[in-house]
Image 1: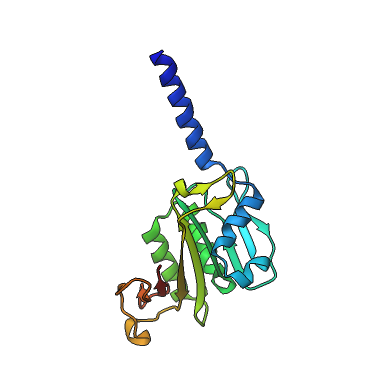
Image 2: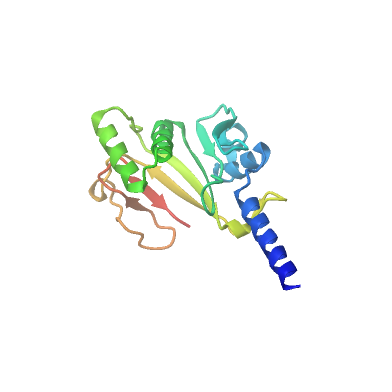
Amino acid sequence: MKTMLLLAALIATGYCSYAQNAVPTADQQIKYALLAAPKDKKDSCTVYGYSPDKQFILLRKGTNEMICIADDPNQPGFSVACYFKELDAFMQRGRELRKQGMNDQQIFEEREKEVKAGTLQMPKQPAAMFVYSADEKDVDATTGEVKNGYLRSVIYIAYATVESTGLPDKPSGKGMPWIMNPGTHRAHIMINP
């Protein structure tokens, strides 16, 4: 009896791990990715996601200025994003460097070097990104519903500083904007729920 219970537990654990790492259908990925999109943009965003073998692919070609990214099945938790198309070179370069095995700090340093060298372009004006996140336990793969998610807004403004924006460099209250990575290529205004 103990052996049967242990076997059942192992099978159930294996199944749960597999289900969490399985790639949703293209339609599900698009639905999830659009959780990060502004309401008036959802119908015409470009959406990228993952093939069944977890390769990054185009799921839907859009007609507006927003690009949405589905949840990465290789990463823990649930996070989708939608950003202004002029950020695409920056985002794409980050994905390439991550694929090469670089960590967050190495990616930051490499992109900073490339922006300063002029080989990687950042938008000349502020550029928005929206990120919708949730715990894995709050994502129902059978219905496609996400509970208890939250949306944060990010506005990239390369080389902005506390002095050039008047924003603090740390959150000063719930929902209050602040500037992260000031004075760098990755300077951005954070607005968290």
